[in-house]
Image (cartoon, rainbow, N blue to C red; front, side, top):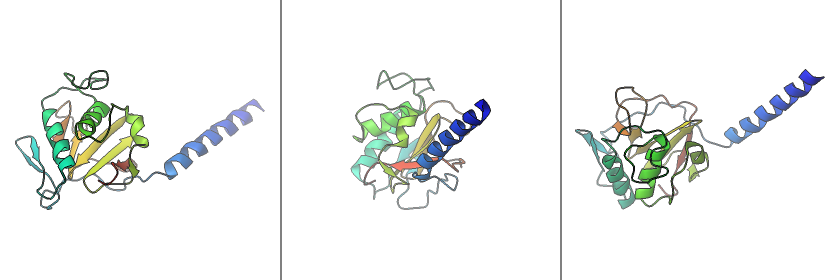
Length: 173
């Protein structure tokens, strides 16, 4: 009887979690950088440059991402102090969105499950899973992980697997 009750509770919890994920849009393909597009940022010597077709908010987001390029990874970085000496994944995304005027305060990675609107954005897309978040701005990935070569927030043109990650974007972008 006790095992049966625990199994029932576990099954019910799994269904609740699954139904919450079912309402989200998830990535089916890896994140790839295609600089040939007119709507894609250009990466030169580690800094990103917004395409001429981008709205001002995208320019601000890219400028903010550029300011983080030499920062180290710091667990909790960017949360207690918006201008920190290092940033973690959610601190990085929060910093860029805040500097672009798209949020007011830093959020933990799980907060991005409900941020903005569902699905990919035209200019900014946030990829979130349990314990990690990263973003693309004008098609270029800003991430604290993914290739192991660098720590801390970096623009990363390398392909990153994203299958199953939840996709969100700022309203209108």
